[in-house]
Amino acid sequence: MNNFQISPEVDRNKVFLINRSELAGRIDANTHHPERRDAIAQIKRSTFRVEKLGFITSFSKNIVTTIVVTDIYVGLENIESNTGIFIDSNRKESICSALSFKTGQVLFPKLRPYLNKVFYANFDGICSTEFHILDGEKIDNRYLFYFLGLDIIVKQTSLLMSGNTLPRLQTEDIKNLLIPIPPKETQLTIVAKMDAAYANKKQKETEAQRLLDSIDDYLLGELGIELPAREENTLQSRMFTRRLSEVSGGRFDPDYFQEYYREIQQSLHNGQFSCKAIKNVADLVINGNTPASNDYSDKETNYPIIKVKSYQGDFISLEKLDFTKEKKIKRAKKHDIFLLSAAHQASYVGRFMKYLDREPLENSSFVGELICIRANKSTCNPMYLFSLLNSEPYKILLNREKTGQTSHIYPTDIKHIKIPIPPLEKQTEIANHITKIRNQAKQLQQQAKTELDQAKKEVEAMILGDGESKV
Image (tube, rainbow, N blue to C red; front, top):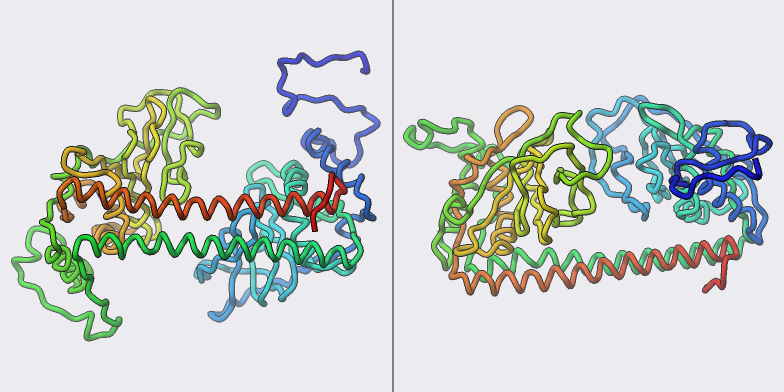
């Protein structure tokens, strides 16, 4: 086999050679993938003692079948990718069983798409059964948490999955993962370095969020709009009357006619500028088309399609597109605004707003769950319109239009909503200022990510002995 050569045109990530003598245990191809073998070899070259994870940790599996309201639940969706930061959603309604964990334990995901969602528990709680719960017996758990979050582990575990419909990491595969064991002092030094990197990331992202949160106040202030205070949710605040003429021929559900909506609309009309309906300032307000499942392509084609998942922050990401086999009629263009028009959770509809700030590839389309709003640039600045529709009062008014058990809004439902229209010069001034705020926030977010990535590289070098480490 030493004389056998693979064509240079073959994708080496998909086709590779291995000696029969090297096959042990599992014989599926991914287990012996060069990328995984290289990662394992790199760990074995560490200057520190290397042990299997199962030898230095215990695996906890305390199943909980009775969920109480005070339990803090950690699902795979509650952990931020690549950081392990917990995002509380308080969603426990459909949970039948879970695992209990204690402060200081490490939660390690089993499923392929979530391998970069390792969590260090800083509270007692319950979690999805799709986590392994680890407790270091011969290692500091904070060091274990940071090591399992490194790319060198993700490279191995992503190729260890078994199962066809929902590939997952089995317990035995986890136990066989190799981990270097530095002296306790070095472990603590690594923990301190990563703690500082995460604290720096949090500080920068907090400042970035403060800037983004300031957009609404700036925008409404420039328009001379003062929003009403929302009343407490009491029986008295939920009781009101309406004339029959107000409800005839249209909506009849009580929520739609709450006084708070009228107060918001009145505050918009009381601003410095006159209002026009969306249909009068937009060239286009339409749903897209969702292709049939067999119309999607596994490979990139000349027909990209924007989906609900195609976003990064408040913007459409052209790196997160799917592709179809055939050209679609409805095309996306630069400066389009995309509004989520259907969701199982009613609170999401109309409140999920994304902006396409780059020129998409020709023949780019969008799915039917999105409404595309295209500003008429002769009367309305696209970034101004996006910022306005993305503000809290308009998210409330757009969400108000939802109907149906699964919650939908349609283009005809939102065309009548009125927005203040200053002179185009004023709109451009507002849009430019908001863009400046967004750029400042984006710069802080990028700095936070870059500095954390650098800290991870330095820690990996300290553990594996690759290059000079900086402590």
